[in-house]
Amino acid sequence: MADWPKPLNPPPTADAHRIETDRALLTKGEESLNCKALTILYQDEHGLLAIDKPAGRYCEAILEQLIRERPDDDIIMAHRLDRDTSGVMLFTTNPTATKAV
Image 1 (cartoon, rainbow, N blue to C red):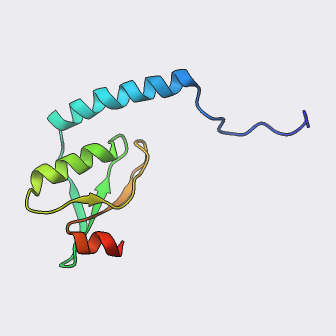
Image 2 (image 1 turned 120 degrees about the vertical axis):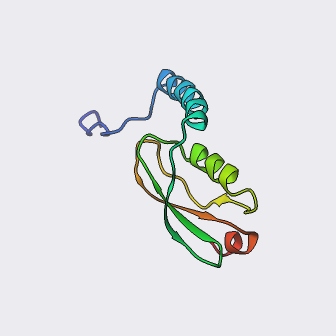
Image 3 (image 1 turned 90 degrees about the horizontal axis):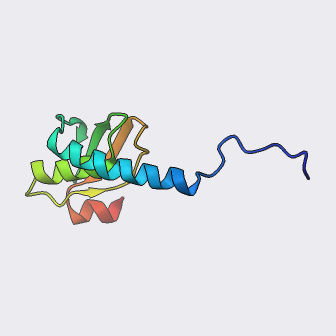
């Protein structure tokens, strides 16, 4: 068994987890002060909202920004992306759409 290959991405150490958590808390505060305009890729009348998530932003910061910018909508995050991953994030803007997703 000693000859088995080691995983390419071993689980993070306790120190790495603590450091990332601290970075998340610091960055979250900075993002709420320095939030950039979000790019809406798709929105429909049924309550589906697609946002272009840039790399380096936390999903929670984007959710908070949407809630501030759209106080009349019931914004729910449909899924998450890693902080360093860019891509499309889906949100819903009403309870009916949330149940459908």
